[in-house]
Image (cartoon, rainbow, N blue to C red; front, side, top):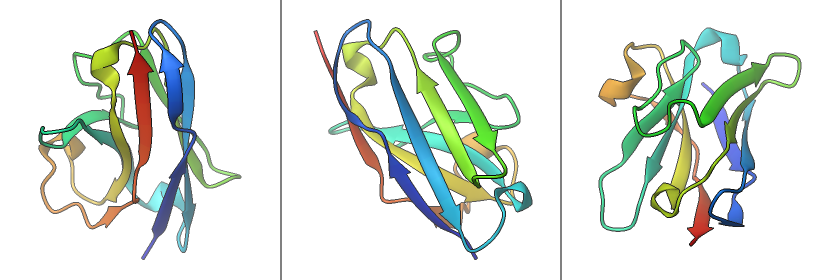
Length: 118
């Protein structure tokens, strides 16, 4: 079992950058397929990226997912942010691929809020 805690959210102007972190405890991240999802107000949760190199079309070229095994942490570097990126961002861990299917993902963090002002 693994516990996930996100951090790094906040308020940023359009065009700015933020880096989100997802710290894991309980098991090594290498045991799972790790990724990020987001949920905007009034919308369903949607896939953002995973560590196998899959990205949502809406973030390709702007967001980069990475990991630090020594820190047992996954990062999401978000650049050229747009108001439509405003959402709660969730870290996820699963043994099932593709992560973007959002099926049977057993482990989720509680989320961190990103607000992009225009």
